Length: 165
Image (tube, rainbow, N blue to C red; front, side, top):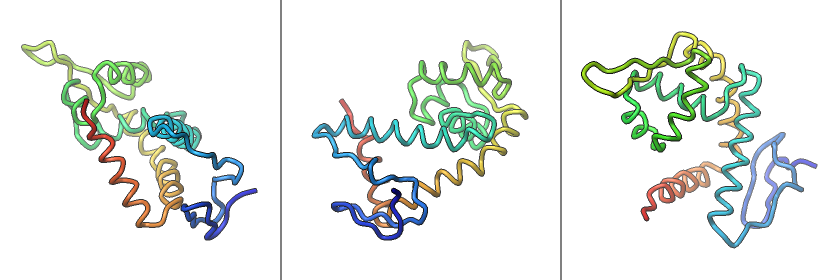
C-alpha cells in the first residue's frame, strides 16, 4: 500500500502522487541521531543507485565524482578531496574503478608528486546519459517534502556536516 496525496503520519506530511514510500516502510526512529542518519543515508544511496542502474550502472558516488570533475575541471587529488569534502583515501578508492572504466584520467603534475584528475570524453558521455536518471531521483526525493521541509532538511544537513570533534 503506497502513500498518495496529502497523507499525514505523525508530524510528517507527504505530498506526492505515486510515492515511492510504502506505509509499511515508515519505521520508528532510533533514539540515536547517528543511527537515524546512517539508516537514512543508506536508504537514500540505495534509491539513487537503483535510479541510476539503467544509465549504464553508475553508482551515485561515481556520478557525483564525475559531475564534480565536469563542473570544476581538472584538479589535483587534494583539491578534489577538499572540494567534495571527502577523505583523500576514500576519494582514491572511489576513483580507481572510474579510472579502470576509462571515465577519468590522471596525469602527473610537473615538478610534483601530485596527480591531476580529469573527466574523459567517455566519462562525460556516461555522465550525460545518467543525468536524466539522477534528475528523476532528485525530483522524487524533493517531492517527499514540502518546499519548507526541504529547506529545513538541507539546512539541518548543513549543520550536521559542520560538526567538529
